[in-house]
Amino acid sequence: MNSIDEKLQPVLAEVIRRNAGEPEFHQAVHEVLESLGRVVAKHPHYLEQALIERICEPERQIIFRIPWTDDQGQVQINRGFRVQFNSALGPYKGGMRFHPSVNVGIIKFLGFEQTFKNALTGMPIGGGKGGSDFDPKGRSDAEIMRFCQSLMTELHRHLGEQTDVPAGDIGVGGREIGYMFGQYKRLNNRFEAGVFTGKALAYGGSRARTEATGYGNTYFVDSMLKTRGTNFDGKTVVVSGSGNVAIYSIEKVQSFGGKVIACSDSSGYIVDENGIDLALLKEIKTVRRERISEYARRRGNGVHFIASDKGSIWDVPCDVAMPSATQNELSGKDARVLVKNGVIAVGEGANMPSTPEAVKVFRDASVLFAPGKAANAGGVATSALEMQQNASRDSWTFEQTEARLAAIMRSIHDTCHETADEYGAPGDYVLGANIAGFVRVAEAMRMLGVI
Ligand code: GLU
Image (cartoon, rainbow, N blue to C red; front, top):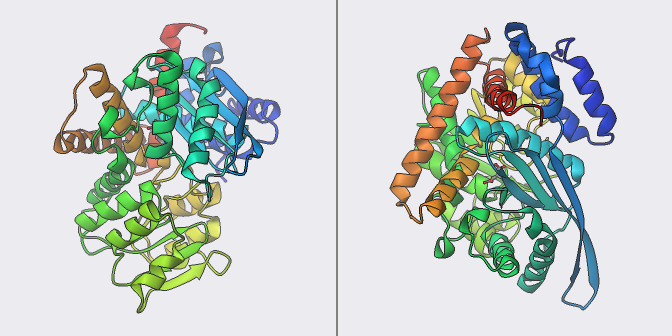
């Protein structure tokens, strides 16, 4: 494994000590600190005023009870979280995740990543993240609404368009955002459009926000491919997941001439050698909310479904891999298989989907590797565009919004690429993203004093 500069080792030791039992948070901090050795060697002033220690400590962490009544009249209890990580660049900004695996360590890792991701967008947004261990699977519309209302009854007092602006993430889409925004509006007696992003168009949402994360990752990978004189045309692509990020990655890859042959959900993956029928996938996943095996059943001839205990989607040979499901979904072993099968580029649509061992395998093999905090920043960047439209009471066309998104993604790509060059590691997007994100947050924090 890559080592951490000895001046930064005490920072990691302290993070591990005071955040015991939070391995994902340790992993995210470890990866950033690994990249910072070259920065502090060049600019030792970043070691002053406990700046790096402060960046690793959330400004505020809120944990609360969410009681709600299910359709059978039983009272259920979940736990809610909001980690307001860093507001040096703007109001806390980041999604809400509803998934049974959610705990404070997961939300902290996501909030930490979000801080640097948001900085990379160049937009005026700080970093935060929230969510609950609530499992939306199999819940009725009415249950989802009651849950969202109960959550917001507590969380509303901590939010505000200049304070903290949530959005969606795993398990939270337009429906949930509508219920949360509705309850916020009711409790505050204010139509404060900019307090949430990912809203529907009908009440202040932005065009292209739904598509933005997947489209953005595709633009980023396209920029990486161009540095090697190639593009998506004729490439075989595997996209894990089948949520919002995966679906719109598939859509954009297809429009760029790539052929996506596999995608997945938590039950397993499907392989469709003729190229995924996106209309069918959208219907199954977004309208009917069914399992991915239904795709194989409906499509018929030659489409295979492989259950998750029978194999990994990364066994499917491809030129480009776009992990877009969840953290640590792509192991070191998966990465070795991908490299053996000739993968040339990896773009992380999810947050931290590759394990540290997998990242090392890709970097050692000189695979073009785009870390999530750069590659999937298109979602939150378009959220910032949504805030901009809300602030000016304006609504842009799809073309205008997508053009802004495309320009932001190209700029993030170029920033990471140039920063890697500047710090003596050409082509290392992990280093480029971590350093460029860190420097933006750190510079603002220095100017704001010890707060
Ligand atoms: N959850 C998304 C992310 O991981 C979007 C956050 C947002 O739009 O605020 O970046």
